[in-house]
Length: 40
Image (cartoon, rainbow, N blue to C red; front, side, top):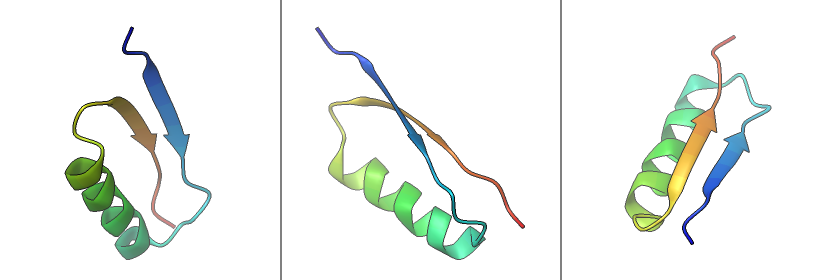
């Protein structure tokens, strides 16, 4: 069973969050992930 993972960033730095998003996209390709973040 492939469940959905929810990742929530507490950082308001858009560059950091975009880097994390890129890492998730490249490294966790077989998982279903919802990554939530917002800009300052």
